[in-house]
Length: 385
Image (cartoon, rainbow, N blue to C red; front, side):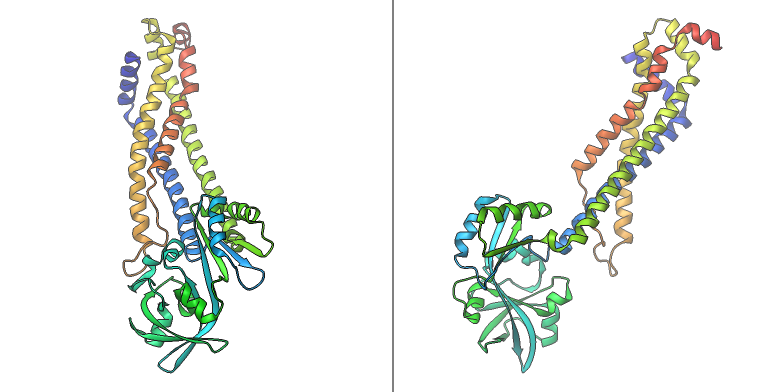
């Protein structure tokens, strides 16, 4: 094996240009493969964050107006599927906001303070002030606060369609990066929303967030079967965004096809060049066999060559991927030095997996050339000389 390694290394060194071309081909192929894979994952994550990040994964609605005994249903839902992180009771209805003799139509939504961050990651969306912690507090969207000229600690009035009125203290301003939401949604605590509506201790819906949003439809089906309540209607974000889900699946398939095509092209290139290399090295292999080197050792020379080329090419390819990502983030950043349109997350497990597969594929690509070297005899070399 050591002899085969020495000879393989010598062959590579003696054919510098050929070695450089193979390594460059592998490096470019690997870099494109990893970059496309990471870009695909980044696009999927960005889309999910933008669509699902501002909406709940699963929503439970009553067929009549309210959900009673929501605490019991919370406990039951969490027992049905351990992937459910939060099952939050919500009270929501349309109303009007009044401040300094100005009125605007709004949607009031009341939550328990502990659920807000689990559902919407609200702490990261509040750009001024804080989240709702106590009864009688509220947070207002960016566009609505600017339109009304609100400041922290201002008192606003919420007026319902039944002319019920309640004062709330503004403790923060949020930005969901969606103008429609920012202009209409007023978030308060569950008790204040219940009191203002006069509903009592009930919820108008329940919003669920899970640790596996992409399988929200499967989890929703389990919950529906487990609750077995004909008064409840259960929806999930995938059913509400079918076109988006289809687009993500199509993009995933395209990404896999591109990655496989690049890998196959790299493997075929190695097979072709290695086969040519065997023909070029006919005399040397014949002489080595005449000197006593075994057939298996002769075959190993080309397998070792392919392995070295695969390792070096993959390492350079991974380095090129980082350059691609840096350039992509630089040229796709929003104006003013903002964040890129698509956030590419460096997934080391994915990189290691792809790199390992490509090194194995590069090594196995030398199998047929190695068989040629294995079958070659000194007599055959003399005949063809």
